[in-house]
Image (cartoon, rainbow, N blue to C red; front, side):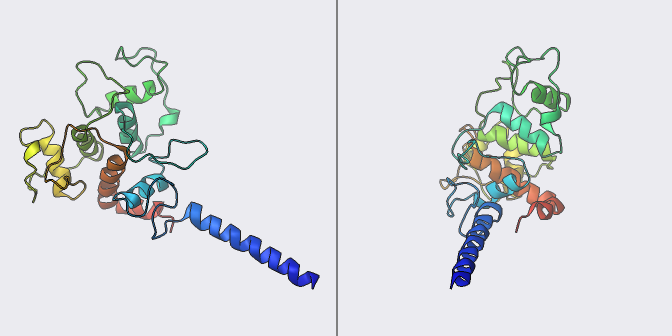
Length: 224
């Protein structure tokens, strides 16, 4: 009798551990298994998982697994991501003795990142008024960042008119992403290039492009 009880207890523990493994380490069909605030119906659920699996993006909580998909992404965060998708280990970069931008002191967390991005000419926005590292990027700037980071050829033949990007400074970059189905407009037929870009849109655009342009990397990062 005691042996049966011990067996049931052990089987229960193993089942619990198995379920925990599924929840924390695998992508399941009912939504994000990593972030509690990314529901199964979220348009970018699999792209967010992809960016996490490859170590490109992570949550913002130390103890709670939240991605904050609607939170903005800053200029400093965007250029850091542009470097990371190209294999740069940003944690190993060294801050310069003197910063090129007065608003990016050497004490800023992204000082080394900004210096490296500047050296590589990976700055997808206007810096004439300063780098403004903590300013949220726009959807147009994000699109330009994806194009720059992944060296996406210009392709303006989109099936969607996107009237609000005509003549916009980032029109070519936006059309290139939309033409390749790496990005899409809103339900009203506009792209809204000057609206703030959030973390979900960032994950979506980068992951869509990376999966298509670097399919071998997509297989390596899969956790299924």
